Amino acid sequence: MDKQVIENYLDMVKDLQIMEYDLENEKITESEYVKALIEVRAYYAENNITREMLDEYNQQKRQAVKANTKDEAMKALNNFFAK
Image (cartoon, rainbow, N blue to C red):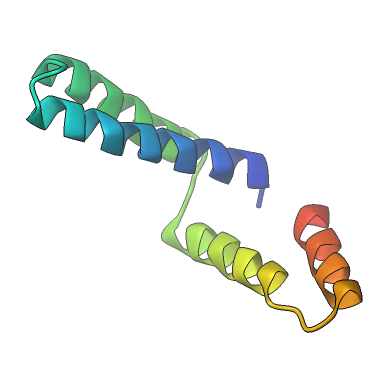
């Protein structure tokens, strides 16, 4: 799993959610929103992102946060960024 691909996708989704809010408040047009939605879906498909990959990414992120000592936290973060 390429973490950068997943992180890019999650950033795109977050931006899309903001655009949805802007659409509801008539700050952007529906065609602008649809264009962004198509781009996000295309990125998802082109990079073969799966729900399983997203779940695995989130699980690794959660594990990196859970630690009882500084050493455990550093080890978890190193493992997270090494994959």
